[in-house]
View 1: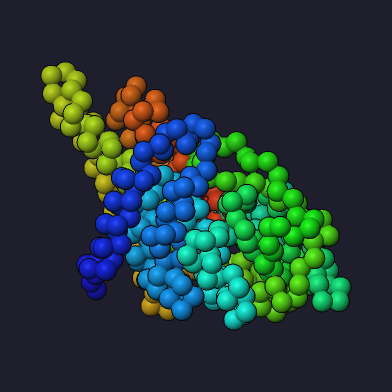
View 2: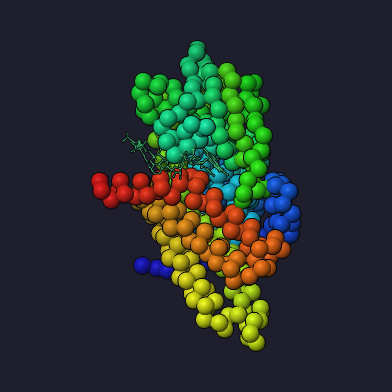
Length: 379
Ligand code: CAA
Ligand code: FAD
C-alpha cells in the first residue's frame, strides 16, 4: 500500500490550485449572485487541459490517471463548484462515455474537440418523470430509414445551454424495458431541438442547468452509441465514474470550507482569546478534519480501483454517498465557526454550504447510492 502521490499528480494539483487563485476566486461571489456561467474561466480550463484530463492523447486529451483528476476536481471545487460540475460532466460523463463506447468516427468527430474544451458536452438522462427511477424513460427514438426520430423532454441538464454535444438516453423499444433503451449523440443546432430556460438554483448557481425539448429531431444511425438497447448500461457505467467526480467535488467543497473555518478561528477573538482556543470550536475542527480525511480516502480508493481496471461501482457509490454527507456537515459547521460573518456572502462559507447540497442529489441521490451499495453487499 502506498499513500504517496506521484510528482505528476502533485504537479496537476498545484496547477489546479494556482488556477483557482488567479482565475476562479476573483469574481466567484458575483458570479454566484448573478447566476452567471463562468464561460471565460471554463475556456481557460480547457486550454490548461482540465476538461479532457483522462482522455488518450491520441484524441487530444491529457492521458492522466483518475487520481490526478480527483486532485484537480478537489482544488477547483474548493473555490468554484459551478465551474467544477461543468468540468466533471465534460470529463467523466461525456468524454469517458465516448472514449469507452463510441465508434472511431464518433471519437474523431466529437471527442477530440470535447477533450480540448473547444466544445462542451452534456449528459442527458433525467426527465420530468424519470430521475432516480431512470429506467422509466419517456423520451423516444424511433428508427425511420437512416435516422432515428427523437421526441421527448430532458430535465436538469448541466451545461444545458453551453454545450454543443448532448449524449441523450432514449427509449427505442418500450416492450423491452431498460434493455430497450439506447444512447445517442445529438448536436445543438439540429432542427427540433429547443433549450428551455436556465434554472434559478439554491447552489452551483453559475452552472448552466436547463431542460431540453426534442421534437422530431433527426438523429443519424451513425450517432447511436453502441448497439440498440445498450443505452441504460451505457448510462449506468458512465455514472459509476461520474460519481467519483462528484465525490471529489463534495470533498473539495468540504475541504474549502474547513480551510476557511480553520483560518478564521485563529484570527477571530472572543472572551480574550482566538476562538480556536475554545474547546467547542476545537472539537468542531477535529470532527471536520476527520470526516474530510475519511472522505478523501474513499474518493482516492474509488479512483485507484478505476485506474487499476478493477470494479469500482461499489466504491464510487460509497465515496459519493459519504463525501456528499461530509460536504453538508462540514459546510454547516464552517458557517457556525464564522458566526454572523458566516451568514454573509463575503466570507464564502455560505455559498459553499448552498453548493454542498446538490452533491447529495445529482448523479444519484444519497438514497440511490444506498440502493447501489446495499444491492452489491446482499448479492
Ligand atoms: N453499474 C452498472 N450497471 C448497473 C448499475 C451500476 N451502478 N446500476 C444498475 N445497473 C444495471 C443492472 O445490473 C441492471 O442490468 P441487467 O438487467 O442487465 O442486470 C440494470 O442496470 C437495471 O438495474 P436494476 O434492475 O437495479 O434497476 P432499478 O430500476 O431497480 O434501479 C437504479 C436502477 C440503480 C436506481 C438506477 O436507475 C439509478 O442509478 N438511478 C439514479 C439515476 C442517476 O444517477 N441519475 C443521474 C443523472 S446524471 C446527473 O445527475 C449529472 C449531474 O448532475 C452533473
Ligand atoms: P426523485 O427521483 O423524484 O426523488 C425524490 C426523492 O425520493 C429523493 O430524496 C430520492 O432519493 C427519493 N427516492 C426516489 N426513489 C427512491 C427509492 N427507490 N428509495 C428511496 N428513496 C427514493 N440529470 C442528468 O441527466 N444530467 C445532468 O446533467 C443533471 N444535472 C443536474 C443538475 C442539477 C442542479 C440538478 C438539481 C439535477 C441534475 N440532474 C441531471 C438530475 C439529477 O440527477 C436528479 O435530480 C436526481 O437523479 C434525482 O431525481 P429527481 O430529481 O427526479 O428526484
